[in-house]
Length: 93
Image 1 (cartoon, rainbow, N blue to C red):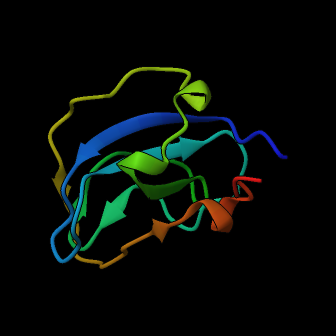
Image 2 (cartoon, rainbow, N blue to C red):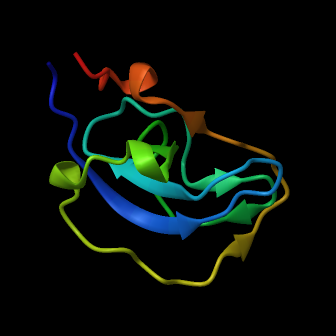
């Protein structure tokens, strides 16, 4: 099983989806986004270093820092970045 290191940068609900999500910044470029969701920058990460995981899927052993509570910044683009464990090699065996 591969260990994926990430920092939880944001926790909340995403419009159009059920459940609570964690916006995570991956140490390596395995994500698909930059912390954007629709027209909001929920957190900032380098390209391909971010994604959103359904909160029950977040492995607390992978968290290296606590949540950043900065206010979202509006941007004109739309990026959902929804990810599942299988998308980042974190499937349970």
